[in-house]
Image (cartoon, rainbow, N blue to C red):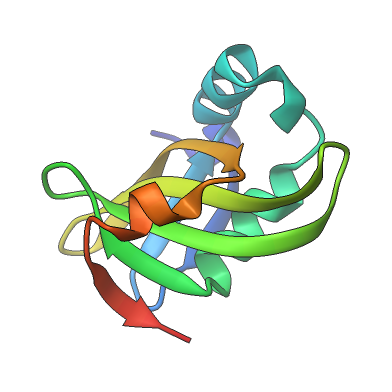
Amino acid sequence: MTSKDTIEIITSKNNISIRLTYKQLSHITEHHDYMAGYQDLVIETIANPDLIVKGWTDELIALKQNQKTVISQKCVVVVYKEMENDGFVITAFLTSSPEKIIKRGILWQK
């Protein structure tokens, strides 16, 4: 993947570079249209999460409470994968029920 395909590279709490690509941002906004314009929330959630929980297989889920969404107060959820030297965003969405995700198991907490 070339750098022109990457919107931003964010350093995770495990000090891994996580890529947010145009393709994944498009995927996020196609499946969750309310996420259009919230690229900064995705970046901030990876860089400065409130919690990181276990994913379904080997991915991680970062969560961050946010007061400033168009849908009122919501929790930003970003699913991403870390590999040995880098990683990438899989998807992102907002939820008002983070408890269901947190039940997966907290790996890191602010």
